[in-house]
Length: 216
Ligand code: DX5
Ligand code: ZN
Image 1 (cartoon, rainbow, N blue to C red):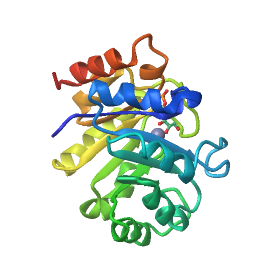
Image 2: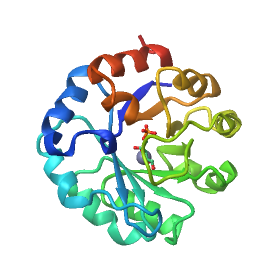
Image 3: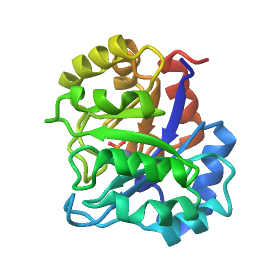
């Protein structure tokens, strides 16, 4: 499986998004992770489609949009138009999963499903054949900078055993140390927010993450 690092812009300097994106691009990040929160599915409100569209205009790395919103189906078109390449929605959201996948594909994007820590990973099995990625959360969605939940690793192992070819993403508390556990469990797509942007040298940290995930 190809190893991909997806820096989460949630932890970046919102006053300098173009410069922050360039750091990721220069370091060879394979994806850019955009966290969308609606203040309903999760307590926070973050960014929406117009900001993502502006970011897309200055970045050539594919955009991995993580929708932490109650009714993702309603907004798929808006995020596709904004430039999303992968659209991830939560299985715990109110939208019908099959219809949401249909819509993401119809809009020309790749569909992915996320599961919160309390959700059994088997919840994605009925849809896995139509997904390009599954996201196993290693924190409760809604905030950056939380501690990594190592007890989620068995969910990754179980999913990897069932789906050897599926991209498995991990999100929450991923850093140069915890990424090793995720990679060993079978994840191959790694989101990192604080670890990248709160470090002294984000580009170097991205390279270290790649190395520790087994890529370099
Ligand atoms: C949390 C978001 C994450 C967040 C991760 O709800 O989905 O993508 O940015 O942040 P870190 O890497 O700081 O835990
Ligand atoms: Zn995320």
